[in-house]
Amino acid sequence: MPEQLNDQTLDKQFAFLREIDQLKSVIRKSPLIDKSRRENSAEHSWHLAMYALILKDSSDKEINIERVIKMLLIHDIVEIDAGDHPIHETVDNKTQEEAEQKAADRLFGLLPTSQGEELKALWYEFEAAETNDAVFAKSLDRLQPLIHNVATNGGSWIEGNVSHEQVKQRYGSVISAGSKRIWNLVQKLVGQYFHR
Amino acid sequence: MPEQLNDQTLDKQFAFLREIDQLKSVIRKSPLIDKSRRENSAEHSWHLAMYALILKDSSDKEINIERVIKMLLIHDIVEIDAGDHPIHETVDNKTQEEAEQKAADRLFGLLPTSQGEELKALWYEFEAAETNDAVFAKSLDRLQPLIHNVATNGGSWIEGNVSHEQVKQRYGSVISAGSKRIWNLVQKLVGQYFHR
Image 1 (tube, each protein chain N blue to C red):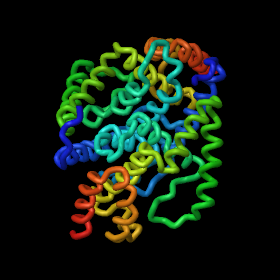
Image 2 (spheres, chains in turn brown, yellow):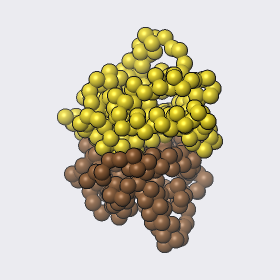
Image 3 (tube, helix red, strand yellow):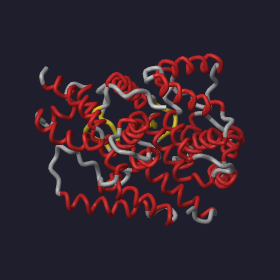
Image 4 (cartoon, rainbow over the protein chains, first blue to last red):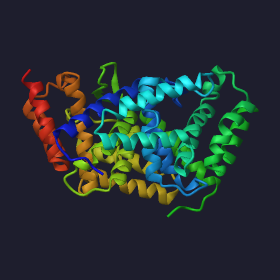
């Protein structure tokens, strides 16, 4: 339900759109494919939305692709306050979860109330990874850095000293929950990389 | 209509998703709001998709917000081959148009045929700026750099020596075609900037 449209609504919306510009300065572990630098979370979010648009027919379960795209557009916004936490690093999950929930309250709280609540609910749905849409979104979020690591001959796996077995564990379950087809194909790429 | 799903389909889709990583290295004139560097076209595309998601109720005409978001996700992909052409620079329009069409053929041509044709058609629709969806998408593409220029105390207007009158001309018609409400509000911001 749209709120009543007035200048105050627009002011809040612009404040949010200005604030999230900071996602362009959150730097991830994954390299760009040309290895020129590391990827930031804003361009990563764009790339994931494109992954969803292109790979939508590979989801094992029925999905609403538009919801998946929206989920992926907002999935990392909490990192503006809570930072990026790569899968190959140990982290205090409870502290991290609390920091992200606080970030979601602050950032989505900049928006008009009902719009902010709607997006926060979508972010919680992504985090919970239970609905078909969230499971597919999560699988793409795990897939894209794998593609970059293979394409850059190791990428963040080299720094993190990650083994073939660890890649299969840390990526396989999440990717194959969304699409067994995709995991079947990419595990061949992963195998080729580790046997080189 | 999805093509038959097989490994060749996925290979083509992955080739496209790897290729468009280069959009992260196309640098625009607009600064980030913290002025730390210029924006690239991939993170700009993410930001525009977020503009659409947040400002959807401000469109003057009825729109399909999911189509607008998809349009904005792909609107700059041709820049991988054809480069970014800022509005405050003179450019040979015919040469530029030909370069972009060639880029669209090559890049969307990496995809399975029907998927590539569908996205190319969506990009042409954006470029033609005739449908409601394209008019609103174009207005957001003009709005976002304006917000950055105001927030950074001039941004690319200073380098380009752009006057208040030129801003009204170059931004006003496109933004107000999508949303008179938004233009009414932002022209106040623009006025405040130029009277400082």
